[in-house]
Image 1 (cartoon, rainbow, N blue to C red):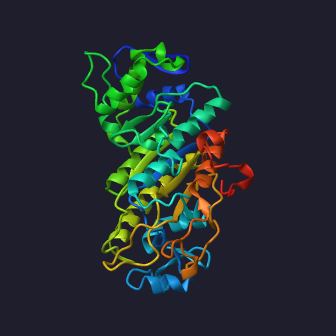
Image 2 (image 1 turned 90 degrees about the horizontal axis):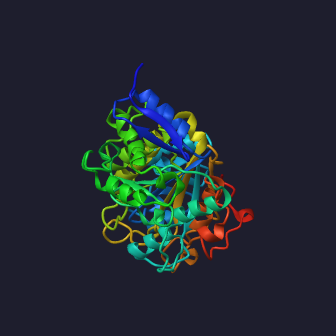
Image 3 (image 1 turned 180 degrees about the horizontal axis):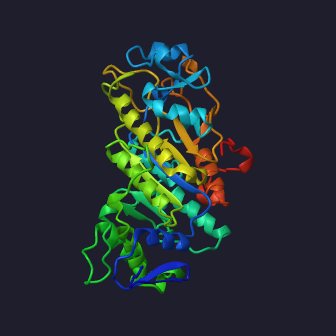
Length: 416
């Protein structure tokens, strides 16, 4: 087989010369050799809008749950039982096998110690990892990668930190370069007036790395962008998930499919982020059916498809979900719920000690509610994320990642 491209490695980065097309299997092979992919990767999913944790993971043995939610509570006989006290919303049926197989862990009554009920502030605090502090400029996941670098000085690829979306999210903002992809298929790489017009993501990528002092990128110049062009040469539009895997035809489903594709392509991804909206259910939330049920179905089917698509590489991947706060324990007058406090988080992965609901349950008796209206927080969300970054991407300095949280490994939930 003849090709006119020359491949070589320079300081750990893939550089390319020539223009002839190459077979996709060779693209994957060279990328695999060039990749500095760590043993484990972390995927963060943000449920924007404040998901109703009490109807996501239902405390169906709490009588006050039913008295406070006469129109939207999930009947006991339709809850997908987890442990005799908690159960999943029936629209999360795709999660039940993952839980039973020990891959999926649930953390209930988790959330931020900050009491804000503002979506904007609460999301900002959770993404920065510094509740109550508005001056933080970077995100917790970016700082986790910085902490990794303090322990392991190694070369990284341009795809080390990425987000599916139109811009780099607050979570990944910071010193470590991160890229945002609205679509893998549309990630055109320019770099010179000879190539195609770059997409906004590609243009930002070029601006980020064109003058970089990083030893990977500084010396390679256009070769770096040619390396990224290999992603397009691999014809991502023709990507086929693993046999039997069918992603929902939704924005979130497509994002999860693309993250799976990027992880499987050996591009050196360490941290990936995506989000999904539609959780702000003030009106007509529904119970077994309705607005929340539809959102949960897409959410769970997309993540379950992602898990199956990864195949054996799930052993090296951990996925964690979060939402800025929960909803009120009582339904409101319009068949919905308002801004609350504690919520439920999911952690999925090969190294996860799943099949268990973690955290201390505070109860739903009237006197146990936060401010008389919400599920109280008993697990700081930073405890969950801190364990995730320490045990996946090797972030050792947790004070750097979550300043002021006073996280200690001996206080982890030990869910990974």
